[in-house]
Image 1 (cartoon, rainbow, N blue to C red):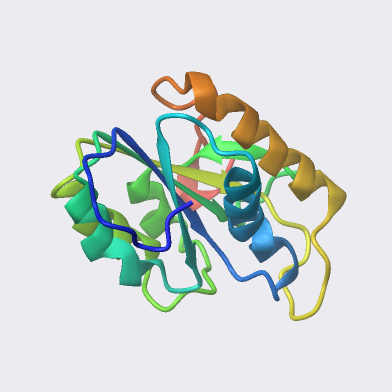
Image 2: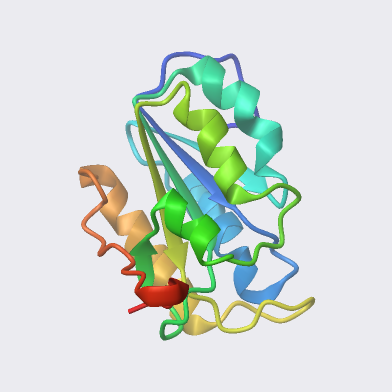
Length: 169
């Protein structure tokens, strides 16, 4: 995991987003911790915390081919479900965020420099101060970690289907 070491060309960057003091919103930071303890070859891992927009410059310096952003995301699914979320659906669904800047803005900024940007959402249970991470979200984090070594396109995860009026299916 990088705390902004000297940039070099990275093929894959994992941007973990979230606030570990907000229950299941700590999914991203947990994934960053897991990667720091057990690094995955070919991945530069950034713990973006609650202000991932602060890492835009560093990610641009890395010039990755692929950027995977992981965050707890309210999708109306069972707790712990993992989905690839299209950036247009984030705006259409008015997905709530605990972060300083909208995730759509972050993705648009990075898409200018990164050819392949994938947003992975984990359905949280409780996002509130001082709640622990739920077991199902911890399991989802471990599943995403297990997919990193052989990541292809969407990592093998299903895409979130958004129906009429922004409802999820």
